[in-house]
Length: 346
Image (cartoon, rainbow, N blue to C red):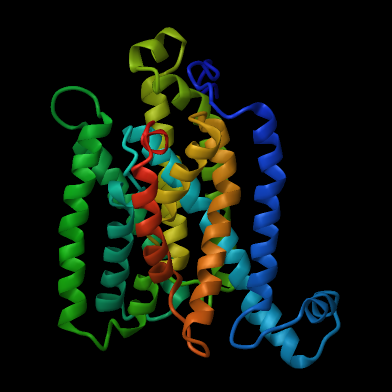
């Protein structure tokens, strides 16, 4: 399927090509370092030699349990969720032409939380594995509802109408969800951890069923990036270049929903990752959406893993949910970024 015929017109970056090339191994190195630290640090710190020995099949019972049962699945979850959040944030910002947009602007987070609350209240679901499919279904259905509402009336759906519909529906669902959780705090006790955003206890039994949806979302995002570059010049210019604007919008919504819905289903609503990472990438590399998508796949998991590590160490032997850490880190960084004109433009 040809999503766009235009390439990168109008997406020249002030950053030299050599700097971009040199930045790639830096981003890869930061991601690799965050993976190693995620495997090593926590309530029970493991040295690098002990990690290598255990991963090679040796090690004692304690190190095998800590690595294979706790930290390896948690680290993989951080990589998957981080990539999904970063790319979905870049998609939504490019689609709405709003540098302050994030995946939740189309009601993804609110829809996921609402369906999880329904499952807890009426189906008695208390396990994380049960939350995943409810959250994913809620994210998908609410996004479809937002698109239908935003498309109703005169004219086709446009980013402004979809944004307004998403914000309105999210506000209503968030209010209902809050009322349900307050009405029976004991029943919703298990939901609190998920609702705060956490990677704790996310094993492969939870990750693997959702992974194909994230893979499809990432492929669609990378395929649609040239079309988003053309639309950034204006819809008339994009159509003149052979871009099917309606198709690009539909694919962006599908890809963004698959990515954000899957990430929210796995780890709960995690704020600021999808909002902040595209800003940083645009500041470093310029407005080319292809580069933004690719760099977000590397940088967003790095931020999420480092935030998760910080959450483990701040109140050790307990830990702080990663969603709270990203909120603390994201707010001041975002204020700094949006004050820079180049970081705020789309």
